[in-house]
Length: 287
Image (cartoon, rainbow, N blue to C red; front, side, top):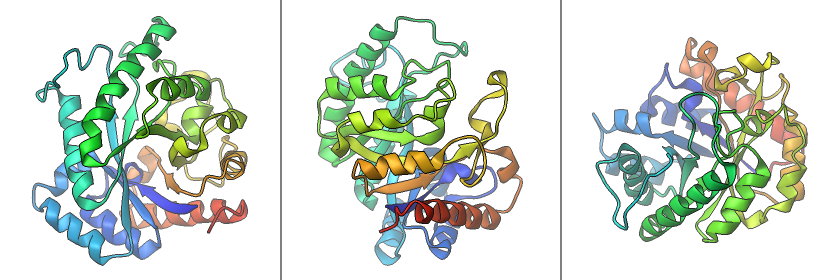
């Protein structure tokens, strides 16, 4: 497996320009570029300059994060490019195909009320419909869609099994998974990752690795993520399960922790790398 850095880790204390330099220096193999930080880059730089960086450095781009689905989007055959989600998707495909990034993260609909109370089967069917359309739009760019289950109660796709049903129903070779250790854990404190063994292994396009604080259910959220090596998520079991499945791709550290954002990007990226590398080495996952 290969080490990767997700820009969420230092989102509020860094820039894409800084992240590129520091990730190269730290030793990361890949970087996942956030769309908001990409837009920041484009204020003073060009896509061709970003392409040139990756052509002349060891660090390479992986997935671009993230496009958030919503119920009812893409109602017509032709996409509405004034739709913010489709603008995100188009930017990810345009830039990704230019710089050598072949993946875009796709997040299922999240209920703004904080709790999804709708018909789960209908929501899954809606995800299938939207992903099928996005797969067609992505194909000319050579982009693959990494569908990410989110274990929070506001999500309509909370489990590995649900995500698997959707990906199988879509049945497109450019639609697969990104499995995130904490998003799996968020679904009823799940530290059983065995369901990953039942999915099509070739559909695992990306992996996000992190642990989290031990807090009451009412306080659980993405801001509780922390680097591997501490916390309540069984990252060892997660990595061992992926290894059994034959996964050899990227493993990207992704946190949204305000405590980290208050530090320097140097501190964040050095610690992100050392903890991720240590976790992979401990579980004999490094190539």
